Length: 257
Image (cartoon, rainbow, N blue to C red; front, side, top):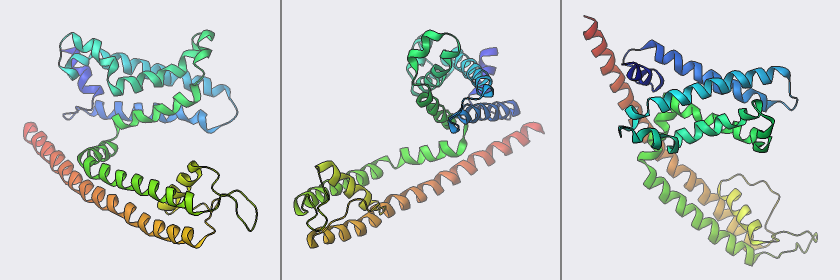
């Protein structure tokens, strides 16, 4: 059945299909090529050709995925109505929209173009095994990571609140405005907790400096905790990936015999 063959080709359900691997690399090249014009200020004529070629590839890919959506969603004819509202289908559509101004001048109203083209990078998630593995890790450890995120946000808020009330809003030595608003305090607390510390906002009181030291130390712990969780889970996911593909290779050899 041609629909099943197309589905196997475009959805990385390879089963030994080398054509599926070629299709993945082709779409990856199209995605990367479509981003190249964003790296230049000037608008060269070759960029228009690149846009036409890549958008055409994206439109064909979108149509093929819509055509095979009944296999992917397994909901009969209603799959064709539901597919455009799936997350990846929305990303595919947003990546096509910037190319519409090549078809008609009226679409100049959609001149989000340069920003929408950046969305095309999200399409890489579909064609990269490594990114898919990382997303699986984040999904598995989402409860732990969410707990760490909530802890970090709570600490940022408390630190910003203490700093905003402990520090003078005008530096008595230089007369410069320090924490003009609570948002400034939140910004300072965030860059300090992440151990970045740009230095554009600095505490001038002893209380503020103590809070700053504690925030920096706590930031190291906050960053180290999810790093260890993600590393352990990623190694486990990598072992499962290797086991799965080794099993598939063995089955392919046995079938060949």
